[in-house]
Image 1 (tube, rainbow, N blue to C red):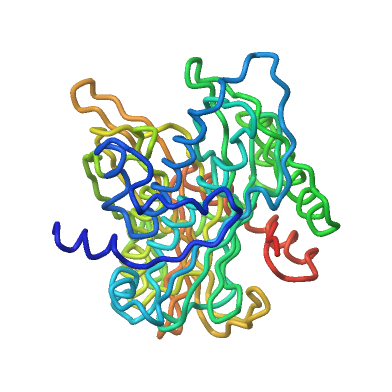
Image 2 (spheres, rainbow, N blue to C red; image 1 turned 30 degrees about the vertical axis):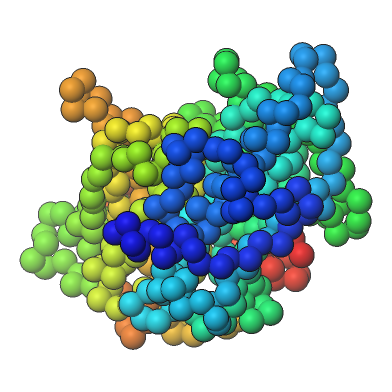
Length: 445
């Protein structure tokens, strides 16, 4: 294992970014503790490199005077934070081995992990002061969407790239893209929040000043998404979109279709199944190798584990090999600490039978879809307590299958859960229809 770790960390990953990241950490010019050096070492070669870049940023920041309470917030441009990482798959066979899946394609769980790590670096670059140092804790608050518009061949070089597209008082949205063979195949929007390390409360961040028309449009779209999220949070638990006659009627119809499966299973539709019968779960104790530079469990690691469970769930449910399409509505509700017992539970919320649709300009024909939700819980057996820390929603197309089972909720709670996600998907489809470029919500060139 140690030899494997050394081999992976020697992979010649190339990084191209703003001058902030051009100094050499690899040559030993910076002095980090052994604990700092090894954080991220066992995630992936890219995460290892990004962690080292973060340590360089922290090292440089400590040489600046600490900002006072009345110190002005700085203005930053999109170019100040733009960062890219190159994957030389064409020439580095060791790197390919780390990222290839059993079917000879790029391993999506690892890419999701790297996207989160790179987005974190970008957030840190944006919050870094030029003249003074603001000690901040930067945490992933959520992911609006990660959308695929193609596939990345493992024998072609790949690039991840991102930049800040919007800032609020303490929030930062980052637009991320992945390119392969010159074509963009992933668009994603990550939201980070800055916290005061002493109080844990939101802390002000440097403000983004968009310059070009394209940057201004990206800023506007991001602001609209953030305002929509605020509206949803303000109506959470209150009468709103989920408490209307139309929604109640849709829930009743779902429960009506589930009734024969519950009351007369031997006579019920053989092409349908109750939602709870699709549940799959696993558990793990979070180890020190899973931590980020703040000592918490790395959000990208959680996303990768959730993706892998969702993939297995879709595979076991459908019998065909799932093809990942997108991530929707990832929420990081509570931090996960080293030593926590983490339980992941997945379930198929609903399915869409075969048809024809357009995804990012590419027509996908005759592929049924499976929507899987994964919930992560931090459990403490000593106090018999358990709290939900994260939710993840994944959509897969199923290859080599003409159809999949229809899934129905058996309780009102399950019906509410399904319909909430269906309404979110319908809202996203309306948004996509308005985006004539078809590049996905908030994608930024």
